[in-house]
Image 1 (cartoon, rainbow, N blue to C red):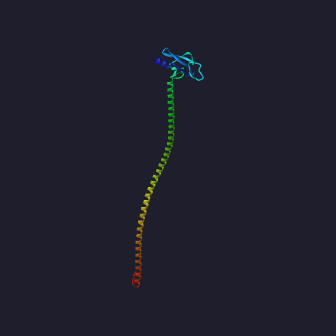
Image 2 (image 1 turned 90 degrees about the vertical axis):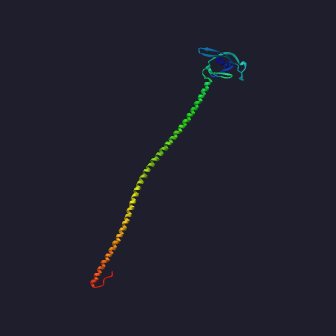
Image 3 (image 1 turned 135 degrees about the horizontal axis):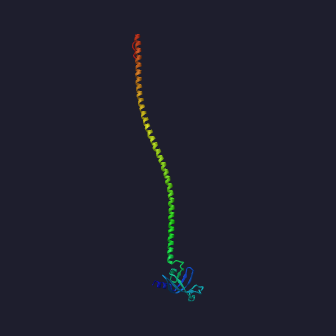
Length: 219
């Protein structure tokens, strides 16, 4: 049934060779030849002759008839008006379509890979930029750490100086208290000395007056 169906598809159509690039003739009949486990089509083909300048087809164009033996794998495509054969050198149309599809998928894959490669290059550039920024941040962090250590050192010195300053203030207050006490003692001594001198002078004067028989001094 399959062979009969294929036979009907191959009759009353032009036979065109892709390899030769020419019309081999017009198929008027077909038989099947079996060789071992393979079968072949024996096409009865009327050759084209006396083709007019107009290129139109007419009954006078077909003259001698010849037989053309083809294998099913030689058939590239079967259309409404023509059979295209490739003599085993051209893959079937479905295979060509599949190859075209594969080529399209390959081109799409190449494009996708190129896009991925561009993304990878972009990510690498961003990575380099981020690495530079990270190095700069690390340098800033180290500089900040040094400043922090210097600040802590200065803070310790300031606290120490503040303690020393407070001690100096306490010492000054102590000295001011001592000075006040010294001034008080000095005043008391001066007062005592002055009173003692006055009493001594008065005693000497009284003794002198007594010795002379004079009145005691009112000093």
